Amino acid sequence: MLKGFIGALRFLSIFPFGGRAAEEGLQRAAGFFPLAGLCIGGFLSLLDRLFLFLGFPALLSAALLVCALAFITGAMHLDGLADTADGIFSGKDKDGILTVMRDPHTGALGTTAVVCDLILKTALLASLNGHSREAALLFMCVLSRWSAVPAMALFPYARTEGKAKVFIASLRGRALYSASLQALLFSLLLRGAEGVLFYAGVFLLTILSGKFYLRKIGGITGDTLGAQIEISELLVLFALCI
Image (cartoon, rainbow, N blue to C red; front, top):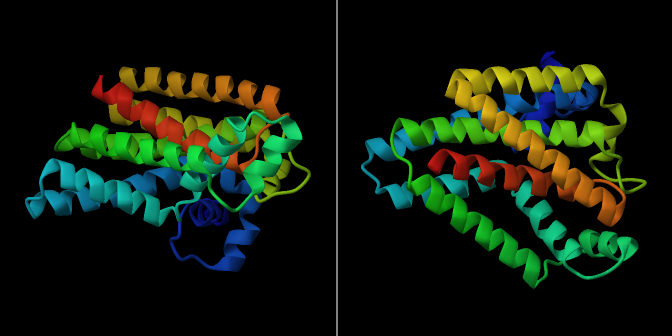
């Protein structure tokens, strides 16, 4: 259990944990993605309390929180969003899209997608305050990290190799059930019955986006999983603001 949790934290963040222990927990890591998301959201919530104590304006606090989230995740999901946008909107066929997504250089569409993502997150967080923003940080990090698990379990991997392949190849039903149960419980604790609706909304987004990638490139990749996490965060924040 501990090895799986450490593996999830190491994969989803830059928090320093022992490399060997993390590798040994890779097969069970996906089952702890929501718990790892809770830890990331908890860290952001502590930062938010610090900014509130220091009297920072809401917009400044929101911008700093978005920057902190990008930093502690190593901008990995943002990179996935950029690569996915560049590939999907390139107008190429399956092989061409996968080639563009693997290109280390970010194009105009990828850059635009990341900029829009950061601006929207900042604006949405700034529109919340106090306990609402603290709960939003926890909620969006839990559900967005969980969304990657059903995506990996329900859709094939589009490449023959890649960083996400080790997770998808070793993902078992137990990990999916464990992660889904964690996310559901956290949703109930954080938002009650309303949280279940958000949970269902994120799951629906996961299914629709997975089917879209299946049609475009034959499955998912590590980049599309990163994009899935970023878009799920935005969905949760939009829902909370509405």
